[in-house]
Image 1: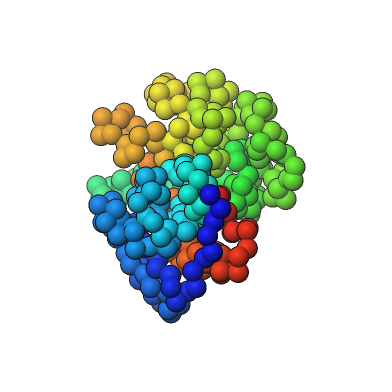
Image 2: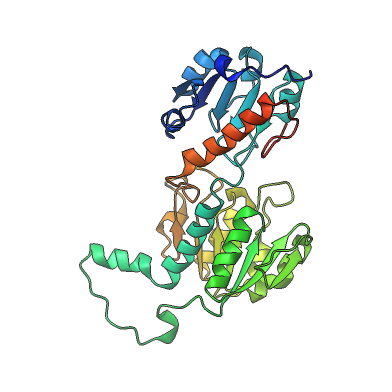
Length: 326
């Protein structure tokens, strides 16, 4: 079904659908004059979707809304990931779709750096000592002391917006950067070396840090499996700010328990929330954050920038959207 003409701003209604983000409040600050509403639950989204020409949404989305939201012309995803959207159904209903890719690239890259620094500089254990009012004595064993990032090697799997930003940060710390990506052209200016995914296991033995910043695809699911973990140095650290399914979690737990790798920092897990029964919670060599790497005080405004640009493009009848998917 071909797209129908996009309504004028004065006729538009936007439905912002998110359980936590203050999308409608931040949108109101733009003084666009466009009518809008906010829903927080799936039930409310189903109840009010028929009012909307545009829905701005992420995990509350359900594809059967395409059949019930009769006015719907455009969905702006709040998230960079778009696994939840059935592209064929969007095309069949003539509804456009765009992602929020890039809105949190800086935040996620900063989070990955923070995880490495928190571990290497013993910030995590320092906080634990503070809670016990314990002043840790100086450490005699060299290998147990705080370490520096300078001169270390980082392998970044995925050199998209997040990976490229992280490479720049790593270079600022005088680290050696090896990038791993599906296509080595075009390259990344801040990587010392770039290899294709097929050569991942060849570069893993060089890594002091392996940071996952790739999308979840059939090719990247379980990319870090038992064999990949075995290829890493026992002193290496794995950082996952990608998706939980990029890592074989059972193999990771075994490698951590056996100290075949030194540590892991995980913002994502295969099942979220991470079950209370997971052994990862109690491991002293694991740092866990609750899929919060992309969280930033600028998130709503960053998404709204993309939304407004796409509304303008649709109003002009342009075929290409910023981060356009359908």
